[in-house]
Length: 75
Image 1: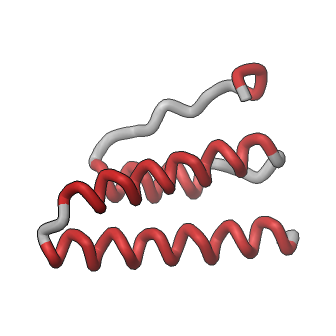
Image 2: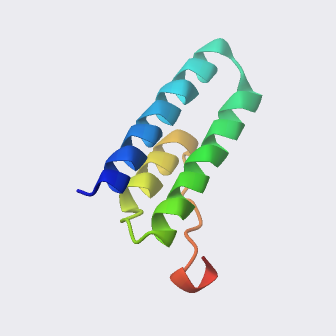
């Protein structure tokens, strides 16, 4: 795995941890913002040819919904 992909994984793990903390605190606004951060990380991964499947699974787990994954032409 590349250094970029490793850093991306680290950022995703951090955001997931922050989502769980925000949910525990009842901060729905922060949860929504952090989920947006996950979606932005997925777009960043897609633009850099990193497999977005694992990020999509994280978003699905956190939201209960499948994210819309843009095609490479849309990025």
